[in-house]
Length: 345
Ligand code: SAM
Ligand code: SF4
Image (cartoon, rainbow, N blue to C red; front, top):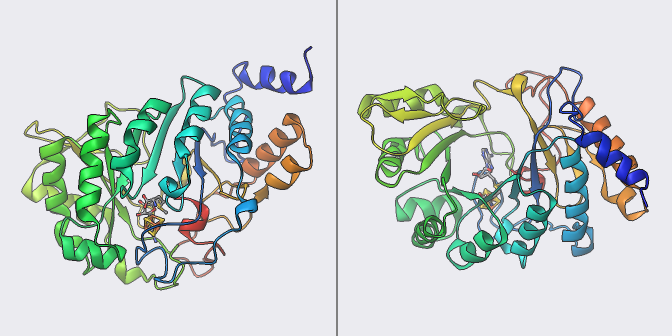
């Protein structure tokens, strides 16, 4: 029998591409799902050495709850999903969730952002479950510096994880590299060389005020433009406009070498005006912006028996209220109460 939930699904899937639209006309199509706030690394720009007060297990959405919310959001126009955390691979059997997400819609682009430590072990089951590709975070190619930045001596494991992921077809592989002044800015050309030798897509990320320790300062930010200039001096670059639209255009190497480089200049050149992202935290809060000061609780209503229509309406209200952009660098900037690992990067 056709119920109200079916009506919502039908309505949203009948081409209402603008179902998750905000007051500035932006449409949310990219959902980042955090599956845990826990992590086996302690990157200095993210989490303190002693960790954080972890969410109690019962606060976390179950895989079934995530699947249901994802189905509702997909019917409202979400087309790509990134599974993240905390470290997503420390959540047991996360490949079961990937399978459920794949079953929501076979056309979804499903990727995962991971620190790569457990990737060699998990890559085959993730690929088998329907994961399309991975983004692996790596901030240094020097063993001692990697250990200093993550507080884990784990560069070899991460590099091995990348090779296994590549063999399993979790490609194109992207690397996220947070660049911090006087820490690792001198390695950007080496990362470009890694792209050239492997075909990886390297994304340099500007350091953002989302660390739990409150140590961020503008002095630590290396502008994306500076990173690209530095690489282009060693290896001339050409903008790659062939791909699907991204927040910022990536670059190919002018000499035809494989791989690409790009920057996520969230601080110096925010892409808020074209932002299509939406975030679901591990404890079921929907956030229209990484820097939002408000969250919309979906877990409470979900567990209280809300139907799909109610949950869809909550999501639409959350997105509608998305602000025009973050205020980093402005006098009135207020850091969100939760840091990156608790939100889901
Ligand atoms: N643990 C996984 C990882 O590290 O890839 C996924 C979660 S992590 C929060 C997602 C991304 O956020 C990583 O690429 C990480 O480098 C980035 N990140 C964390 N804190 C950041 C900060 N303060 N500024 C910029 N990027 C940050
Ligand atoms: Fe963990 Fe990722 Fe944060 Fe590093 S950036 S501490 S790997 S959640």
